[in-house]
Image 1 (cartoon, rainbow, N blue to C red):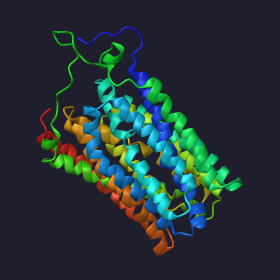
Image 2: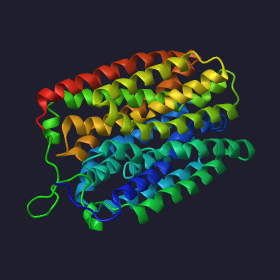
Image 3: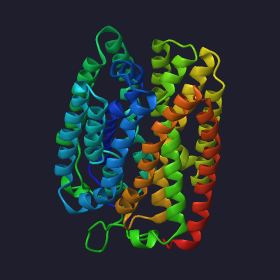
Length: 412
């Protein structure tokens, strides 16, 4: 029988804490596009040179990821969260001090080292700790916050840049970020249900009354020998490449094709608003439509968004793109935790997920400068958008193939 719980289930407070973490993390991740043009002009650098900040940040995160899953299992979970909160706040504030492009790369690398201590892996592990049932819904909600913050911060940063300087915009962003990440780390997040006298949602008691940790699935070493693992990893690499290659250049692209920076910021905020709706809704869609059908729906929406971006010629089309792109943005944070858990199980979920995330961050590290390079060489982003459209269909194929292989390779 399901473990009894008295009163309110605290796991939903942990979900709210993770939402706040994502509110903070979304600020530097999603607001950089508004800084692209003013910083390029101020530092006298190309868009490709600016975009390499992402490469330094994501490469450092990538280097850390294989260790993060192990560290969160071995050392104090909360202490690692504190370290991430302190060091990423310092890194974001230091962006305001940049006077040479290498300074920007240095602080981005620092941010990349410690952002993984607050981001996908610990959040996914927290959801696995607290939820056995309704995990897809809890995970999709937990990752939803980033779009909300960017929805407000991007127009705010744009206003500060236009009326003051990009340096001051970074200082304001750093303060907002600090508030958003420290509140949940200090007050809201509890690592295990037992910390508050509760048990995992949907778990069953053993004869001793304890709630066992699920052992379904495979270990990391076993996963590395499966096609399932590598298909998901390649799909994550390509997803990071396409998402960040598109997302970090959208504002600049809209300005290039004739829209004002104010409208471009509004369009970007629209993406972030529907990003939040999409991430929350993703868990419900998984529950109602099923695993395979939901994956097909979400990636086809992603494909449609990229095609619409390619042909934008009016404000309504730009806003249509923003709505569709926002609704499918849950691919980045909601789809893959569910895919990895469903296809490879709970046994070493955090470790496997952190290893798969390496591929995602390699893709992000390369995608942003790739789009900048395409613009510098071709004078337009449209060649990149066309390529990305084809890549999205390949990603969908890989996910469906991984599901098929999992049935043969993984014993649950």
